[in-house]
Amino acid sequence: MKNRSCDVVIIGAGPNGLMCAGYLAKTGLDVVLLEARHECGGGLDTLEFAGFRHNPHAIYHMMAEIMPAFHDLELAERGVKFIYPEVQAAYVNKDSKPLVFYRDPQKTAGHIAKYFSSGDAEKFLKMYGDFAEYSEKILIPCTYVPAVPPVEQVQALEAARDDVGRRFCRVAELTPLEMLEIYGLSEPVKAGILNLFAMWGLSPFEALGYIFPLYVYRMTNAALCAGGSHRLSSGMHKAVLEAGGEIRDMSQVARVIMKNGKASGVVTTDGVEITANAVVSTVDPEQNFLKFFKEDEIPGDLVYAAKQWQWEETSLFGVHAGLRQPPRYVGSDECPDVNQAMIVFLGVNDTEAILDHDSQLHDGMLPDSLQGHVTCASLFDPIQAPDGFVSGRWESLVPFDADWDSIKDDYAKQCLDEWKSYAPNLEVMDAFVYPPTYIEKKILNMVRGSIKQGAYIPLQMGYFRPNDSCSQVRTPIEGFYVCGASVYPGGMIIGGPGYIGANIIAEDFGVAKAWGEPEIVSRARERGLIAF
Image 1 (spheres, rainbow, N blue to C red):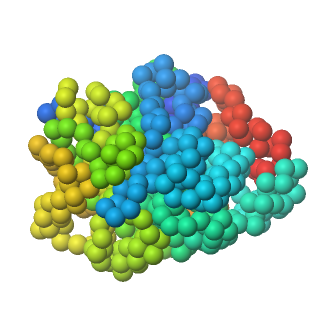
Image 2 (image 1 turned 135 degrees about the vertical axis):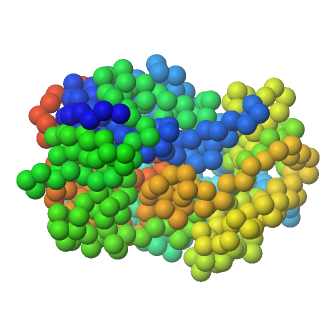
């Protein structure tokens, strides 16, 4: 490929890079997007084997059509469609009744009242109402505006015209466990709710109460991307090209060009030089500040912060299978909706068991109980499997540090045997195994099998993600911006970093934005709930 110059060069064509490029290209800026791999999308990955489509990374889309990019980049017109299964999640156990979560909280409460207790049904509705309000009025709007220092955000919430701000402040620094105690839920309902958060390797013991409500609320309103998750990246890819942007794959960045103290372009590993007025990175802090620059080119505190960056202590083990027929689960004779759930959790019915599982994982051990979850995407999107067959997906939390090359096949058999013990009719025709080491090998910034581009711990969240100098997209390095999943508000394909990045960069270039502020953000401003 040839050398060239442009207004903006963006490193990394994952979801945030595609999003940022799509927006900036719409302003008329000359944008070049670089991707190290042979295809774009990052975790928006779909593989096809013998007609079965498998999604080895992202599959559950929590924000889906809430993301501003869905509307602003006209993704529906570019073939992106989301499917919302009515039965969102089911917990099946061999010695107890199934627990089912529906998109409709009233249906969930009805199920809880029928199979467990009317008291827990009422408590669930109270909790769900609070979590929905926190999410709709505060957490979702804040996902699409820049980070602010914690003190400023608390002051705004406390002074807001809507008292939800003050109520949220009372719980925001609790752990998920402490927050659940407020509602007095019994097992297995308590465990089922906690697991919607813990399934992502997020610790129930960390003071992450400010995101716990969002995960519970959105993981009971999640979607699948029709045709596979890669269709979402394809839609954004089209948006970039149709707006005049250029995308170059197989273009791994070796270093950022510094000229007179300013980031002025990049050089790829094959020697191609792209000069630009702004360099935007959507990759991780270690690449951003330890690889792309010489230490003496950038402030020492950025180097120090990058060296302190922590990756997740756990990762995910996947088995992706072609099934002869849909699984029929234990307990489904009494509760048929179990077989229609988007996510089925196997053998999770007790909070203490979740906590023991978490402790073993964080001690670097393969846990005693698998606590896997499974999804058959083709039940909701038939194109993801050949006619008459089913695509199946097992996923469970594991430590990264294991001899996966030696044990992966035996561990996969253990997982499939576990699945079959809950679905006796399970018939696997073929499967491929996806241990956490494969995640790291496939995608450069998923170090140690990371799924969020860095651990979700208090000192790497909010205004401190990735550090307090860079969480608002601009960095102390003139001309260098960051807006990947390692930047506020984080990963999980929520559409925040790339969107916020595009807004900040457009403002710095002084170009008119070809999009407006999301209505949900404007309403939060009117209520005084946003500090930025």
